Image 1 (cartoon, rainbow, N blue to C red):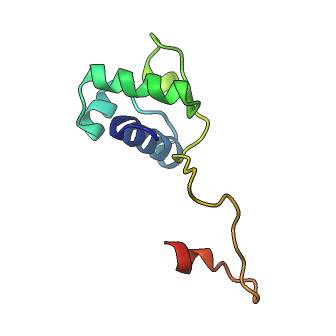
Image 2 (image 1 turned 30 degrees about the horizontal axis):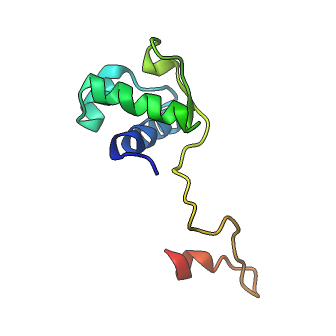
Image 3 (image 1 turned 90 degrees about the horizontal axis):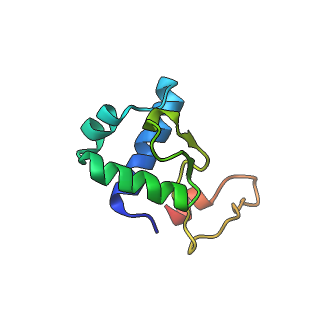
Length: 95
């Protein structure tokens, strides 16, 4: 499981890259996450170690690339269940 800081950074980075077309700067990560630079760098290193992002420490955060935009959950099934009528029943039964 990711720490709260790493999870928050991943959500911010994914949202920014998908919806705004760019990766956030360190200043933007500070503002949006409410974390200080040292905690942000720790979170980024955790995301690199867990292979959620590609990033070289020492480079600015906007040079990172998101590999996996959602936290992995080991206890949830990886498959999607479909109903007899073709409907996606997991939405209603699991969430």
